[in-house]
Image (cartoon, rainbow, N blue to C red):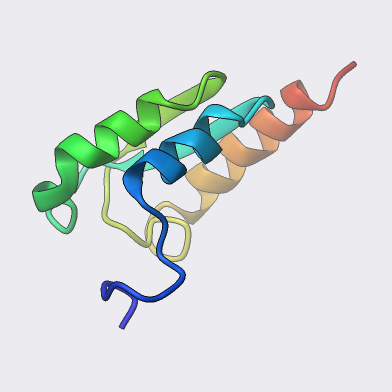
Length: 88
């Protein structure tokens, strides 16, 4: 059901407008296994590029790396990011 369009779905220009307004540092931890997103790779990469202060890190694993396998690595990255981002 999450993959289906619904009445509240945004158009791609609306999505890009929202992403373009993100003004804070943003961490994106991406899995190296993108098989679930291969069919959307161009759209995905365009959206990622639309966030101006994005720090992108790729970890080995699949979509649920924060729950399985890479839990400590993800926690360490998030902790370091928040520590660095919250310093005035």
